[in-house]
Amino acid sequence: MAKLFGFSIEESQDKSTSIVSPVPKNNEDGVDNYIASGFYGQYVDIEGAYRSEHELIKRYREMALHPECDGAIEDVVNEAIVSDLYDSPVEVELSNLNASETIKKKIREEFRYLKELMDFDKKSHEIFRNWYIDGRLFYLKVIDTKNPQDGIKDLRYIDPMKLKYVRVEKKTNGVNNNLNNIRINQKDDTIPNPQFDEYYIYTMKPNYPTGMIAQAGKGSTKIAKDSITYCTSGLVDRNKNRVLSYLHKAIKALNQLRMIEDSLVIYRLSRAPERRIFYIDVGNLPKIKAEQYLKEVMSRYRNKLVYDASTGEVRDDKKFMSMMEDFWLPRREGGRGTEITTLPGGQNLGELTDIEYFQKKLYRALGVPESRIGADSGFNLGRSSEILRDELQFSKFVGRLRKRFAHMFNDMLKTQLILKNIVTPEDWETMEDHIQYDFLYDNQFAELKESELIQNRLGNLAQIEPYIGKYYSTEFIRKRILRQTDQEIEEIDMQIEDEIQKGILPNPAEVDPITGEPLPQEGQGQDLGAVPTDEDPDEAAAKLTDADYQKDTKTAEI
Image 1: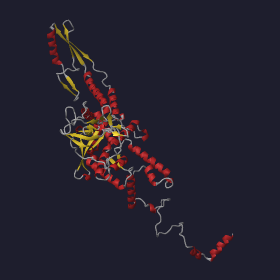
Image 2 (image 1 turned 120 degrees about the horizontal axis):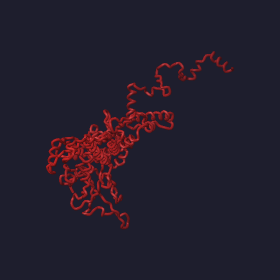
Image 3 (image 1 turned 90 degrees about the horizontal axis):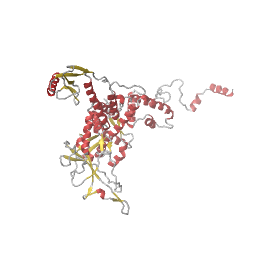
């Protein structure tokens, strides 16, 4: 076996061998579990699965060049990746992560660093489009082998045509590992426990007759699994065990649309003009001479127009027969002589119902709402409750695409954090499910929906405000009612503090919480009607005069 290129992340503690399963891990990468034998490279499927995979990727890329399909792809990509002047298309969300603020800060910094390596803010549209069309995305994680603690130094895109994921069953002394069964009790009951080697095979020139990846050691390189970031579409043909693209469902619809459009053009070119029938008088000429005479007349007067379906051009070509050609018929002596009649052209040339049907079928296959076909189809700026159901489904579809695409960030972030000793592999297993990725959202109805959400949240806040401090805490209100994340809470608090220091907002400590009026400062005179300060009782009694005392006595008697 050739030596692996790249690096591998090893667990600090070996997992217990008591965890035994005869069934390998369920994979969603479309890779068969091959059993290596004899000579290296016998894992290749005889039926040509690799060749078919190459052909699929080529077909997907050809489909993306079709104008109708390209328009639908752009709709999907533009909804998933929003290019904003000020904000990044994606940020890491750590509000659900149970970790210290120091760890969260380092995770955010490393994520920004990885985005800079990919140049994601500028190339996000192209990266997502390539992943959506091909159905898979590969990146090579380049590190400094002498200083692996420095983390990832570069991220390089790899064409899926040049890389293949391979899973080969391990052997022990020339015997397949599944024969080394694991005993599960004191008796002789055993179950198989297969183990597999997983790696990638990279080749510079995949242009082989069969479309097959070259064998390791013959123009190709084995790369360790941890050195590659691999993100698939999640769609797998279980019958042929092959990764599919989101364009796969639209192959038939697109081919039908192409044929209908080409046939429509040919039909219009052939049926639109009026054709003529020439009856040529050949007299008493023999059959052979009559045919020669007819061909001479035809070559003299006919025009040849041929339609090229590959380029859409119409050219004059006399080598090919075409349906636009006039009819030339001989007529013997005794007939009405030479005659020319005209056949009318097609009458239903303006019928486009079938074209529109297959366009809608193509958009449905790609998951894009039919209402987006054509530039004249706008949208109504009403309430979000008036959103069409297909637009809502499309928004959910784009959300699923983002979730799947975010697996790439997860793998890169895992490698970076482990190499820099920020977390351990065991810690990452517990943290992974709590790290989310927040994509910028720019749906047609997003602004209206956001406005309505803010109004509803503020309405709920007004109703629940009397109970703050009694049944609800401020933190609960901000997180559950206002739906503010930890990062947003931190930013808002910093902004409020800064505005208080600048004098834009009043200091809450200097404002009456009931009236909202500023509290009197020290040294300022009190207004009329203000509550006087408490005095010493002895001093107050000394100030009373005899007249006041007598007056109070009389009042008490009365």
